[in-house]
Length: 447
Image 1 (cartoon, helix red, strand yellow):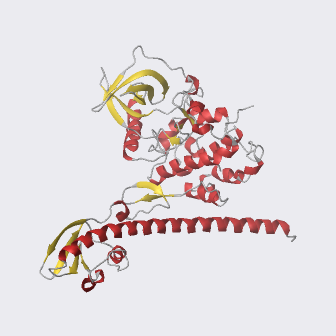
Image 2 (spheres, one colour; image 1 turned 90 degrees about the vertical axis):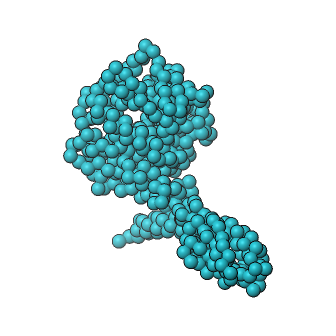
């Protein structure tokens, strides 16, 4: 009988207190972890990380728990054994992705460097130390009420990677770490950019060494020459969702279903079946499609994300990506030309921002002879008729108006983004309800 985690268990570090060696997220279960005679130190331009213990070893290298400035870190070191050039390329993928992108559900890389040895140099990278992985939670058992909120957070990490044009291709519970607050973080992007042929060669090894690593791989990953895309990640997520409820990985046609252990969540069986279809063309094609199915069940914690083209970051769909929200218009300088004040701004203002700036109902007083409605734009400049006696007062008013216009503009854009997301969510829920009503009607009719 598996233990069920209490409702607050995922939030308590004690639940995932340091992983026993055989459960380590970076170690293959049937491969012994040799300990070096001396624990290394990892020096970078900014810090020295002193290893206190080796906490795991996998195909790409060793992982050490380290201390630097009284903080704990995990340092992953690329070992020289095996096909070094291939492993180095994977390692480079991990480092570049972890340095470039930040997301609350993707493990971040905070530092990196190289150890110089007798032969090839050995690169390493530094990441925050996390107390456990999803594997630990699965071994302990996750309360049914906590599964979907946790799974939704996992989806956000995968969705962010996909929106950044990265396919993970090695999603498994060991590669989903859990922080002290119980938040899941996607880790190990070592084979994220490898071709289907390169991934497939990893299967052609002894069953006792590497095959266990492919329990969550999609069928197309096991056959050289096939296209491996984001649908392979969706396949793995479907297996994991079923396992989070049942404790079993679906194998074949007669696997243990969610409805057999948690009838209230039985509607997930159809979703899981669509995620783990053998033919990738029969699967849901994106995380957004998975989210739509879940949103259709009116699950409030399921959220959508979008890629901000300006910053190449993934943000919540209800967050405005208008450039003036992140970088508001600023007053730069001004000049008097004899009859007008000429104000220079940090950017050419859009029409809706300028309408706020010149509104007489903005909440600021103004000189009746020089209403703000008389302002006119000219590129990144604003011209305002003035007189010698009112010029200084108008300058002071203009500066205040810029600040107030920014606040109103940002508020409007955020409300607009939230409204669009509410409308999109309601459309998904309405479509799902219409489909449920149609099915119920067909079940009640006699043809």
